[in-house]
Amino acid sequence: MPQFLSNKRLILLLIGVILLVALISLTLRDRGQVSLPEQIVKEAVGAGQSVFSRPAHFVTGVFDNIDSLINTFEENRLLKARLEEFAGVQAEVTDLRSENEELKELVGKEEDLREYNPIQAVVIARNPDQWEEKIILNRGTNHGVKENMAVMTAGGLIGKVTIVTPTTSTVELVTTQNPNYRVSAMVLGEDDVFGLIEGYDAERRELLLKRIDFSVDLKEGDQVVSSGLGGIFPKGIVIGEITEVTIDEFGLTKLAYVKPAADFSMLNHVVIADRLAPEVDGEDNGMTEEEEEES
Amino acid sequence: MIRFLVPIVCLVLFFVEPIFGLFSPLSIGGSLYYVVPRFLILFLIFLTVFYELRHALFYGLFFGLLYDVFYIDIIGLYSFLYPAVCLIAAYFFKKIPQNLLSATLLALGLLLAMEVALYLFFQLIGLTDAPAGTFLTSRLWPTLIANALYLGLLGWVFRSMMVTQDPQRGTKFGLY
Image 1 (cartoon, each protein chain N blue to C red):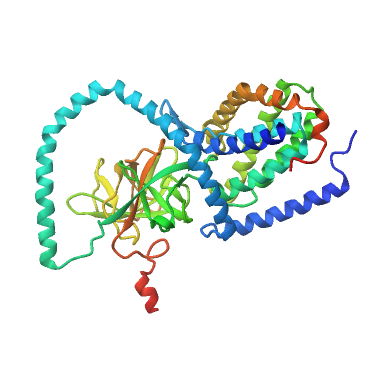
Image 2: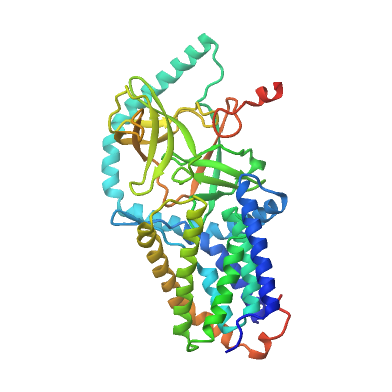
């Protein structure tokens, strides 16, 4: 029987394994930071990836168009019915907006958590091994993207930026299993209720809204939006709607299941929200830039 | 010919994988199925068994490293797994009948082993808490079926691409 590996090769293999284990543990510790060689590789692969993703998006676009053509008749009828409502709502919105601006001028309030600078981006890849829910966008620090910015589609919030290089950025989706992933959110109603989006139920495919005051009554179907109080996201990005309210594992606060408003399956064009109000660094309760300078 | 063909095919497969990843997860009948495209490693297994091990190891290390840096941000995971899978493929292929069917089955068996190894690794570092049953039904079987389809369609192309080459050429240096 021929020997599988000679002694010399076996030693080489062992050294290789040890080196790799060391590398794995080293890179596991600081995954948020990118070193220069990593950055160069990311840039190069990103450039190649955009070349390949463009025709792919074109093909899926054609299929989408055919799909929507089939449903045109039905959709048109529905939309016509809603158009009449829409005119009324439109008038009301303009009225409220101007009123809001006047009132803001009256109290001299300039900064608003709602305002943000939208950065349009295209998804060039999705992490193919899907253990972590990550997508890669074709915008980076050159276009004003910073870490921790909110990323959304027309439907609603989908995730936040975790790593940026000059021309690419990596987005971790809200459907991740990462326990350190939090979004401060609020439930719209007569009184706004605040809580944190923490975690994702993979079986139900719904987000968990935790730390809600026990005395508050929540209804199914209530809208959940970002509150802007976490310090990074703008206020008012739609997250989803409540499907069930229960008590959390310690019995002290309430927990609500939130069905995400955005569709995560075929992501193509997304918007990165660059908040105009001062941002804090890090996850939550970080410091603003001014505070940092003082300290 | 193969001198340029192999790196080009590797590069194309590497870039096509995440594009197929965009279609996943598939939702059929209310449940989600994760289909992970593993085009590159299957090609490398074919390269190992029908052409030469050293080239496969080299490309496995190179593209594994790119994969780690660009997608996973854990360096050393795929750059270890890809060459390791090629080594095991070379070892086992000597002991079984050497034809297209056996190579396909071997490649799928190794893919299964690799998926399980990745599942255990990600469970170890706490990136997933999916129970083994969910992993089997929503990830392993769909992935294996989709990749079997891919090998069924393109396996003979890969093989004819490698086997028609002069066997003497494979033993020479120069492709690096």
